[in-house]
Length: 465
Image (cartoon, rainbow, N blue to C red; front, side):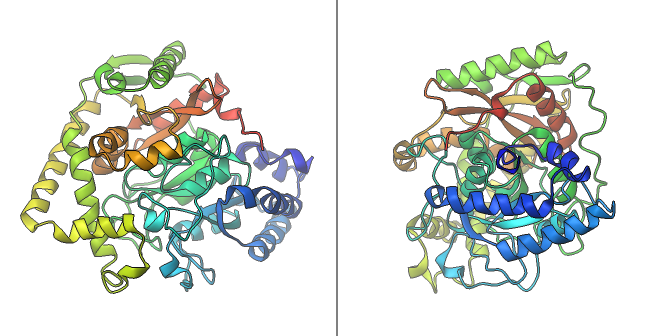
């Protein structure tokens, strides 16, 4: 039985663990064996933590045996992006510069997972400093569906490990699309929460006011379970929102009756590849059949935000790295170093104009989404880009701006989104869509995702390994 569990949902595992049909220790041992067997080819883990995982699994087993079950995550093996601090365990953030950094405390999200009873299998690989490219000395994780295709950035290891059955859920971070791109590329489900919904304490910064920490799992329901565990206020992060954390899985009758789904045909369908168009149109038909009311929207133009995002990110990244850049420039890869150079070169008045445009855009987004519970858009305009295409795309500003038109604007506005697989290409590669919510509207996007996934099986398909 253990050999068949690696693709089960967290909800399914929670029932099996609570009924003591599965042992947390045996489950963790099976997952560690699978990582040892499968991951050398995929390179999704920066490091594995078997001793910690087994110790946590033994504690979980003892508590479950006494009917002291902390949450649906109790005894469930998970992993976190290697920019989340882990007490006594190296946290490199994809940077050889930090390979020997051993935090004295856990990130708040790591602590909350532990307090929920989750078992930490290890730390997942990412691009350098959570920007666009992997450091030249760090092997990039490989897409388990096809090694020639992009595995996403920056939470590449989180997407690959979750898709390949090497953890039951993971944490990623999103500054310009870094939960959504790897979720789309690897056929998993990811939530970028409202900015501030999840504490950033103990997580390496890329750009402080754009960074979001969120779950990446195999379903919207599982993402809701993980978000439930990690969301909430935090005295160590004053920017973490004080609003109560709702039950993200409550009040869901399995349909979308009474739910209003916004759709801007121009924004959602112009200049996207045919496979993406078909996926979005089919998803629209599915949510309509589930009872949703489709509301025509006119979403604000995102061109200024996609242009501003890179420069805004550059300034904040320069601040985040001021202790080591330029003094340690020789230890940086060209992509991250170039971003910091751009941030250091921007004038204060140029940056202020960006901040004002960002505030204006956020207000326009709030107004546009007021009549609806969620809005349907693609995750990206390209169905399933190859690694070769992504290498050249970054050199063409117009193509890069097109790539982030469905991601970066919502880091600038802070709105929550859920990304989930909604189709496959003729070559068998996943294609994703997004539901975008109002601020603190995670429950609405989880509900939309759950309803869609109840009547489709895209999220239940797995790569052949």
